Amino acid sequence: MSFAAPILLLSLIAVPLAAFGYVWIERRREQNAARWANPALVPNLVHRPSPRIRHIPAILFLIGLTFLLLGVARPEAKLSTARSGATIILAVDKSGSMAANDVRPTRILAARNAIIGMLQKLPSNDRVALEVFDVHPYITVPPTFDRTKIEQALPTQAQPNGTDIGDAVQEAATVAAKTVGIGKGTNHPPATVVLLSDGAQDVKALDPSVAAKNARKLGVPVNTVLVGTAGGQVTQVSNVGGYPEKKTIPVPTDPSDLSTVAKLSGGRFFQAGTAASLLQVYADLGSHAAHTRQNHEVTAAAIGIALVFILAGVLVSGLWYRRLA
Image (cartoon, rainbow, N blue to C red):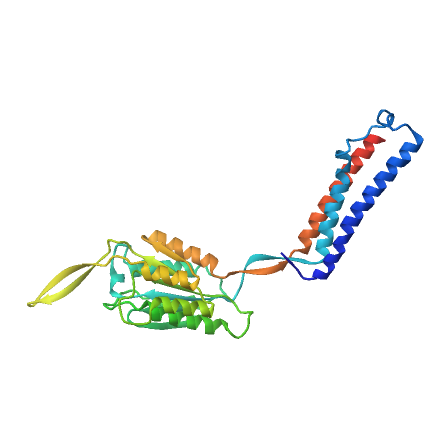
């Protein structure tokens, strides 16, 4: 909790002064009553609430006064709000293992379908870019508001190559930072990377942990999604002696690099073993990507609480005075 006009908090000194005044008036009232009647006979002459209960209206008034004076200082609270203009870089692995069909119809097609579902949930004024990678990352669609371009550019077939996660993270985070203007001022829209892969880096390239730390320095969290299961397999066809020969190769998922990247960059790590769970992961990412916490003035709330307590004090006091009448 903070205040836009903290100097006005000095007005809170009125609360203890009011409490002191109330106590002083109550004592004077008791002294005046003692002059005209025997104090021992007063309870039999006048019906009065118990000493504890009869102070409730005053307590309610004092609480209301406190909130009223807090409202004068214009209190602010950090609230989660949806910010427009977010930039999301989608990084999709198209290496050979993404052809495995343990996630139907294949890992890469399940990823494509899930991304399309997420795009439909994102605000229309958020920009989205697409990066595909295997042994090298490529920005196939720069940040754009056109969802159709992203859908049309999504890969549908895996390529028989390795996986370069480090350079993919570095490139995506750099593009995101440049797009929203990170480093050119503090008031910039949020940016994030959503990287989908099924395994660890298997080529000589930038270390994923180094890339993740660089992304964090840029202020771009990298959310990673591991798609597939431990039982994934791909089939390769080779020509042996003039005859085609099929060979099944196991391609189990490996979460090591993806979890490290998410942790070091300030993002989140997800596992998606089925097409349904992959859709849910992307829906969740889409609902959080453009939300930030900002200070919002809550003066109206403070004044409203103050009025509730003051009106409660008036109501309780009126009921008791009516009974005394």
